Image (spheres, rainbow, N blue to C red):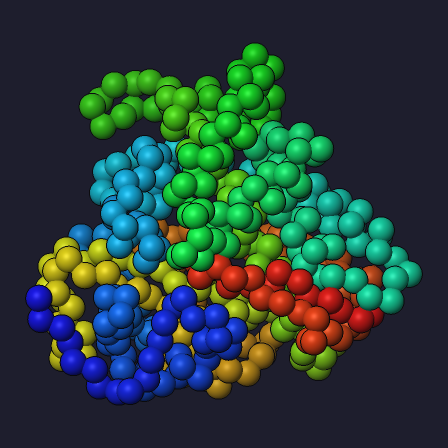
Length: 399
């Protein structure tokens, strides 16, 4: 296998916590000096420019998800369970994605708004009069947990345990015994009793919808989902929907805490909040990396990525590419955004994007009503350790 020569001495290791804490100087060097980067130690290629990431995400046959969407899963070759459509391609991916998409229609998302607003209000009102609180532990990790619990039909008394359960696997490091795919297997027992109960006691939640949904499978047969497929869908929605949205809300607290001028603009003009959500997502996307398997030799910047390689994309680098965005490292809640790659692009564009945006908007609206000013206690803030998503484990703020 021929390897693309290195064009620079820049080094990027997705497992390096020091780089992960503040990757943007490395990202800039990757974009400018090594737009196609090869890491010999971990045997992967990486692209960091917006145009290259957009191209890879749009090419469904040349760069596939069927061997895994993260570097660890792709390289270990661990097979994904049926229904884990983020790790599927072609007709199988389209079939499973179409089933889940019925849960995320514009009307379904809109109907969630009053419930999400109430969750936010209840949590924030409980913090009234405090001088400081943890933006993540006391707030950001609570809202998505409540939303996912309500969607799926998990009783409120069990929602915190569900969130903590997934945290173990989603924030696992390569040398940990846990992994995201192992987390799916370990989660089956968590959901089994709920599925059994809901089958006997239907409701208007997602679990009931999935249990009763009929569709035509790839053999042409009309059927309902198997028990395993329902379990995988529920686990995927519960894990991904909670983790990434929690990371985003935490970044909202960090970015606006560090940029009081931009925060004041939102207090004075709340109509800017939807655009501010997009700007915060662009600046600090929750996904740290996305991977694809290369099905045939592919050329980037005059160099070849051989068939069979792992190709990593870096959303945080692509969304700060000055070839696409003006003054990309500056926070500007009035920015004329255009499309970003925060939620992916093409066939695998995130199904939960509208829900994540809705939660992000409501969170800022409700927070800024009650806490128009806060400062981040940087000395006691701590990032999570995982390498799939990037965000805050603790983020104390003084209000």
